[in-house]
Amino acid sequence: MKTVKRSQMLGKQQDLKSFETRLFERLRALKQQNRTPETQEDVDGVEIALKRLGWGNYKFCMKCWGEIEDVRLEEDPTRMTCGGCASKGPQGREPGG
Image 1 (cartoon, rainbow, N blue to C red):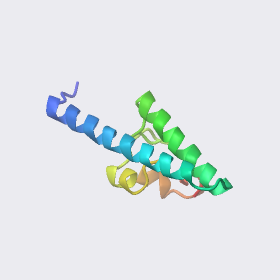
Image 2 (tube, rainbow, N blue to C red):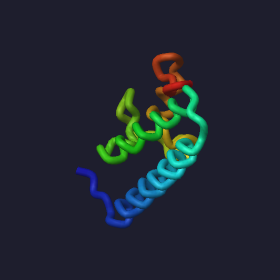
Image 3 (tube, rainbow, N blue to C red):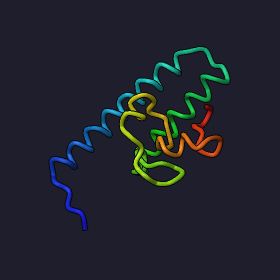
Image 4 (cartoon, one colour):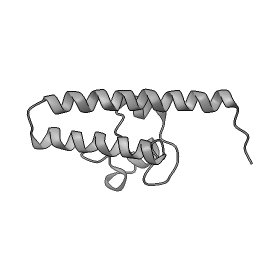
């Protein structure tokens, strides 16, 4: 069994809180824009990401269940796949991508 230090757990919680804040800010900005199919798709992506945060699987790839790299989530917090799965072509493609 892998031991996780308290400081590591707190760091991960702070990271998730940071992603959550960014997602809420993005959602608020999107809802202020005129509704188009593209903005609705973006709103849907943010709402799914927020649900995944609540479920506890936000940072896990929806294809292989490996961890999604922080740099990918910092670029786009609605990403649902790790870099490895995203690079595998159509099956690993990002939603809407």
